[in-house]
Image (tube, rainbow, N blue to C red; front, top):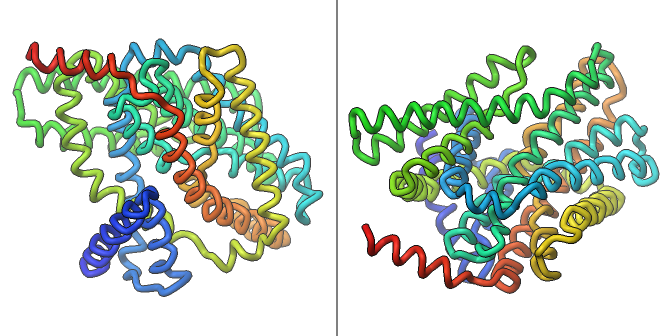
Length: 413
């Protein structure tokens, strides 16, 4: 396992450097590297390393969501306003709904099987979107209208809606007694409980830090450990109380930023250094989950269905931004920021296949769903990351007033 980790770090850094040299996001290189070295291609990673792949990816995702929380200022969220909530569910519902309706026209699936596929695809990837938005926030791009902050917050909420609807549909498909109203009502409950738990824990950690004044490195490790335990709490509460742990992680960072801005930036800086290592694990191990041969089975029909879903999602984004203060280029940036898929699709793409096999049903539809989910990663993650990076540079103006304010704040310290 240690050898596999060392190889992954060294080759991952090389892939990141090469792609950046060509002015492409380094994460694309790491994703493709994961595909190549994964068990479905060269298979050079040790089996025990792959066995802990999920936990490593989760820890890396927690690191980036913590950093997101440390960049979510209250003023920026206030600028984004209620459109953040609209962006959290309208584009995903339109994408999932369209795939449900037209899926049988493209693939040998029923409408219910198409619905399962639709809401697997409806989740945007925070692993791809969040790091790019954090970079734009730090560069003060779109800061005047809080555009990256709006996308960052909405993309993180988007997954809650998509996964909840998918879970309801899966329960209906497998014949379980599912309360649709109760499940949908659980969405705001999970969001509120997640945010509430994060705020409370953030406040408690602040009191702890003020009382004992540990060094910044120790503070970072404490925050990271508490965040991982929050995810453990979600699993313990699963089936009993809806709880969005990853939102709690972001809320924890938000509270610390709100109360102690200097400390938040210090912690974010430390996490930024950890992210160099964590990003290699996250993107290469997501890539290692991808089986190119399975994706090819989806063929052009699967790709066509994915494109139709992206069109519906894009229309949903534009509807949410109607009569907003964003200009045409800025709306286009938000639209393309909702394209990438990776984390959720890698995590739950094979779930319908497993359920079908357990129930003794024909597994062919499950294989098709998995193939399209994998194809969506290969198609949208590199494309989305490249287009977002380019659109951010071209369409988001740098807010010079933010730089002046930041410099003044630094001098006052």
